[in-house]
Image (cartoon, rainbow, N blue to C red; front, side, top):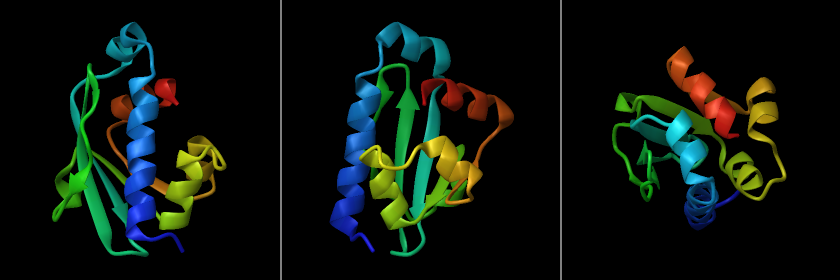
Length: 113
């Protein structure tokens, strides 16, 4: 099982990867949303804000259920996705990642993956 530091590093890696997306493409598919990532095996949750300029740094979150887009993923799977060892769509299809969001947000996010 990954630890808290591994998960924070994985989230930072995801944010850095999103920062590499072409600005025009990002602006085309992104609307401002709050995003939470709950890591149940460690009892952790983080929150960020996605916007046309990218993704803000992830901060600890005491109420992940209030975010507009909510991800739930175990620590090892989060680290694997951040290191391209697990594709997010395959992880979702296998039930290893749970995503709660509107259908429109899901379609937008899919285009960025």
